[in-house]
Length: 247
Image (cartoon, rainbow, N blue to C red):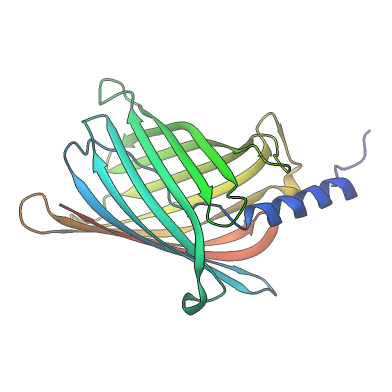
């Protein structure tokens, strides 16, 4: 019988390097849920924090502008800042996100393609690309989402193999304007050779969603989630909040 799987020193070192490399240039954690946003414009304000146990807190505010190019294609350009506290943030990344709906209700499972181009603000301006399928379905009044995201650095001396990230969400239409749910995120390691379970990062927690309708197509949407577990192999808590003004 084989011995229990334990991470080797090399794997531990590799995970530490992954944590350091991912500390900068990593986009905020929000479950991507594309819809038909044709001709809709929006201002997107995001804020998320990571509090490592026995470590310092890191905050990431983000600001974006989005547009529904067609009933299938939505695009958004946003910038991020990062720091140990909100008063000391510095430029982090420039991001361009595109989501394309491949199905629009003709199947029980809606499918979309997500892409995001990321550019680090600091020299040498490291670039990265994320892409992958977005899956969504409804069971009664509950919406279920599962996103499989591949992430790869584009060039540079420290280019790593393509990484696999997972997003999932359960959103129950509790009241007309307020919904309750759960969110979860994970970093699995290399897409074709995932890390041993002790080195993977999984976190999940409760989420709150709300919509405030204004005049015409105008609306304010918000969401917040508190997640516990691991972030890049280290125990810690994560808080995310997002407010979107649509017009």
